[in-house]
Length: 160
Image 1 (tube, rainbow, N blue to C red):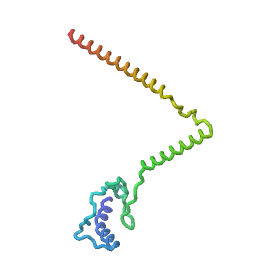
Image 2: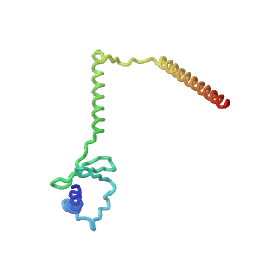
Image 3: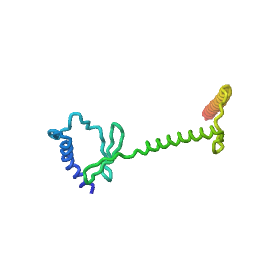
Image 4: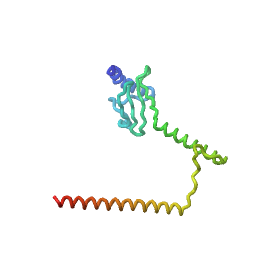
């Protein structure tokens, strides 16, 4: 079933090229050659159930091409990722605006969320130092335990 539309498309391609060039008032290229400015490596085509998926290798845009009664038609495929990112950005901006409006009115933020209080710089340095000390102590204990395990292993191997 796929072979008939594909064969029809292959046979119709030269007719479509001739019709397009006639419509634009140009003479068709001699010997079926492409014009010198044509980029033959711009698109990649992949067979689908309804026709072909055309990938623009320059922009990444995907189009779905199918044979209609008037000829081949390629429609741009919707990019879900772009739509989702745009919607997320819109919702984030709306969320920020709503929070700002609540805070401007002196109302608390919903869900018990409180506005972030500014932490004095001196407290930030102390908490960072304490966290670094804890990490270094942990690493020291781990290193000592590894050395003890290696010594124990060497003693056990020396006994046998």
